[in-house]
Length: 619
Image (cartoon, rainbow, N blue to C red; front, top):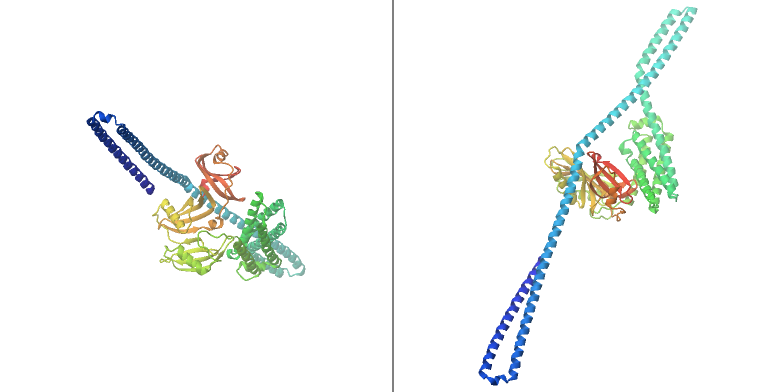
């Protein structure tokens, strides 16, 4: 722009100089003409009548006069043209300056409007946080109270049943003893041994009553234990039956070519997988002993949801989907065979030994199930792993030493010493190295580094956070700066939650004023020291990818008309949300009704109401 202004100034200067030059030439020409005219007049007067007859001299004078007039007119014309060019250049310069000022003004207004929208959104959500937190605590307390009440009632029922059985046996024993005593008395009267036999029988009855009283507690405990054992065995039998059902469904869907039939089978598998997951939680199994099995069942359910979404949208299952179903069938079939062997040979003794932590058949079976599902989970993750655009690409998987080096880069400002790789984590979404280190105060930092490309999945920095020295706005800036240092750009805060002196921010990806809720990162900031103490980018790394153009068939005004007339719209925008049918483009409306705030989502293609969320329930 400076160069352009310089050129305009130069042109203006050159034009002005040219005007001056032309004016000087015109003036000089006029002076010469006047002098020539005077000299001619004198010459003609001196020569008298002889000069009047000289036609050649008169023609020369007239020609010179005409030339002078032509030159003068030409000079005036060029002067006028130069002035017009100067005026045009000045007008162009003023118009450019005006356009620049208008663009700057529009940009400032856009930035101010965006900041105002963000501030209004924060204020409207923050207003409900205190009540929301109290409601959550109340619900948790109610659930805990109900659980305690249910446990107490169940324990009371078991005790009452045990007492009833013991009392019944005691009554039967007394009745039998009394019958025996009467019979003995009759016989003693007949045989003469009445006194001695009566004494013996009386002593026996007293001893029996005492033994019955002492053993009531033992009977009660034995009954309770037997009830727990029976419940666990029943759950194991139910789980085995469910896995057989899933095995049959996976076997059939591998060869099905009908979308209608595929939907029926996938729906059945989804329901059975959720029930199997619930049964696993009921069993007295340590979390580390069924982690991979649980992940396999969860992944089976997720794959069913994904394929059902495709079929509902009229998209047929492709070859890759059929390969996924084949892999799930092979793993599930192996699980079914192991469970069949276990339930056929398992006894109460085996179950009791497992509950006591001893080596037994059930523990060996669980170990084999973990190995089966671990290999299947890893194979599935390697097949669908999405490389992170936030880190340098690595040939193949990184090793533990490389994961440690990545941590040193990510946390170079944290003064962490002695980073070490302490293990691995394998889930349905990723495989990661566990790396930990300690700062100069001995505070531990624990991080997960993705094996596929070295991306930072998440970390926890167990720093003490007791005072509040930074406000929420400054904490948000700290979180944004940390994400930018990792290469995460175009991230927008959609909500935050205060947990004492720690604030957790939820960021989502934004592109061209469209927010993508599946691409989510959570960042925790300690407001005592002003440092990031935790992050979870697992959802972002799992979902972020290049997307096709959004399928939007209705505009914002049309979607607005489909809202309930009771609602007052405070803000709106286009968003991408995740549902059971997959990702969908939707219009997000922040509405108010009776002093309450709601988020309402309408499908941007059909106008269908996808979800209504009370702003109090947003965390």
